[in-house]
Length: 452
Image 1 (cartoon, rainbow, N blue to C red):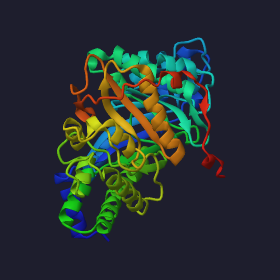
Image 2 (image 1 turned 90 degrees about the horizontal axis):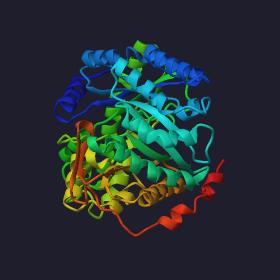
Image 3 (image 1 turned 90 degrees about the vertical axis):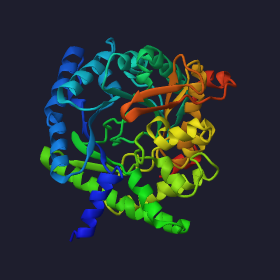
Image 4 (image 1 turned 135 degrees about the vertical axis):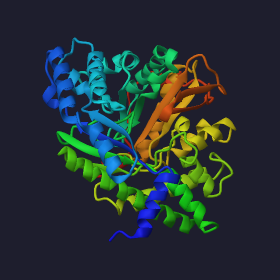
């Protein structure tokens, strides 16, 4: 039984606290599009995406209108393209990216994810070519997002892939330097990548997923911050309880949207991702939640503890609201996309070292961080290796989305606009890890990989 108080509370969350469904993402399998003729394969991919997701945007807007719930993004994720490209070994995989981009434009979505490769244990046919093509693919498309999984708790870390990705990120930034290095903002490197993530840039449709599925990513950091503010000077246990209750309400809204989208599109419902995804808008910040707990600024000592509490409470509240929780599910800390993170980085309270510590307890990792444009590729690779090690040892998803800001130095500003936001270029440690990165090979999986 829904009571008047619950209805009014939800309306206030939407109107005043930035509550929204961040994305409806349709996952589409491309296995039946594989063809040794790349032209036929691209045509099959375009046709299938348009056939399955042709009404995705219209359905999202209809649900938003009917229920009064803002649905910000409508997106598509597909089977990792390296698997499809393996059947065309002598052809340029960037042609698949262009087919994906053309489909995205036709159906009117925000982004399409899955220009991806899974190389945590080694390189299969198609992987080398796809990774090499990423800079070209992202520089020549508008809506395509790319991801590469270079490590896992079960497999360890593929250091050959780590070295390659440092160079790929730098080259992608250079090729899109005239567009604020936007290519690197659409590229993420994972350890323990989930197969059902609805958020970009890391979304892809895993091999274990059904032919087509609807996944929903909720948001609401502004709602959580407001709830803590209303509670006043309660103890930290009560703060955790408040976050759990709020996460439950937010997730129930996401579950409603997911079920309704599934029904209207005649596509199975997959998961609700509980992640608190911030925006550059005032009042929609994960950093401001941490500051509401009592920190002068995000990045101060105590930040990692506050973030651990937040991440755990969000999960505990969310799993009570939906039987199918997945994706990343936690609290995102993308620097350029979070108003509080931006301010903390500008004033020096939030550094790359502190961000790395925070990734041990948050939802993903080093996300949307501009670094100096002259940062050597081996330093980018070493940052990836550090982050992957945190994910591997702690059996969690970690990721790196760094943007080498070509022509800019530490303290300068890089601005994308929109949801990607903007912020200061963050300094990096310049001591060289080159010899370590050049060793190659694979970091062995940790002992917990033997859990079975």
